[in-house]
Image (tube, rainbow, N blue to C red; front, side, top):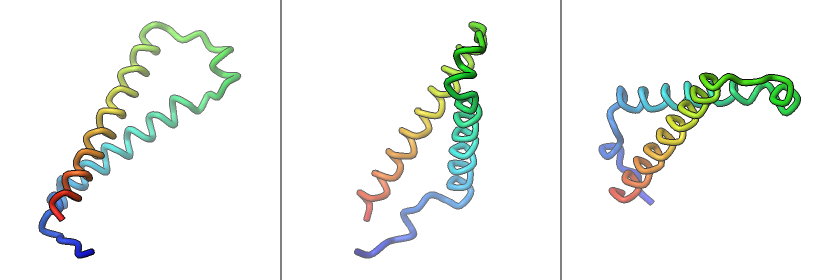
Length: 77
């Protein structure tokens, strides 16, 4: 199966995508680090809960965009 490099996004764009993905994954890891016991003991404020929901929403959106980009690259093969 041949792979055509001219269908890839520019290195700058790819770098930006991977940097954003890395930041989103780090954020999710930081959110989940407390573990079950920490979640039970800590009373989250409404602001903390909303910030976490927003972060997860952005991470999922980014994941969807990257998946769509990968699919579109496969279509152009």
